[in-house]
Image (cartoon, rainbow, N blue to C red; front, top):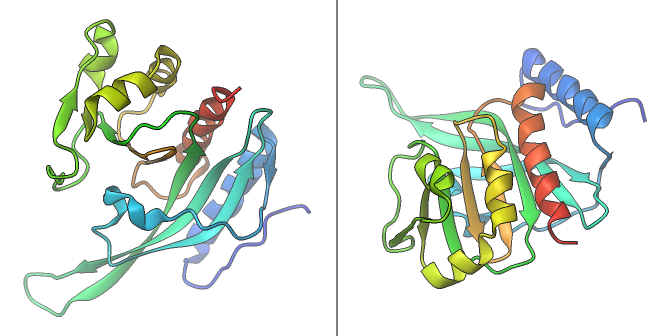
Length: 207
């Protein structure tokens, strides 16, 4: 197959070109396959719940020796109400990456800067710092609902993988053994490859 076959309903021609360029870059740098249907249960992630709808357009499995990780091309539907006018529905196309983790993290939210309007404190009541890893704690704001479980799960190897991320505008959310990462940016090779590289490295930690 020379290229992935995308559902071209909805995106503009420019966005479709970006999808194709991204798929080529992924195939050049990673072992990618198109899996069958997988229910990733995205509704369990708070970071996605403020949208009107979240739909997976395309799914790619990143093949690793120790297990697959995944790249998702997602449609994000959000209501927009201008000062004067009627509500409209805006659809954005974003890359999100997903990995299944060896340890149970409970519920964890990690960010470098505020990119969501509100964090639900009932779900994420505890801020977590690692005194033995000051660079990590200086860079990341970590919220969890179970401090002991999160401290045990966030090993040095996991923190090193987080520190290797060069970008600053992204959010990580973990629900038990499932992690997603996204940056709310459009689907382009640059934005998508660093997400894919991160979850691929996490998959190797399962060995």
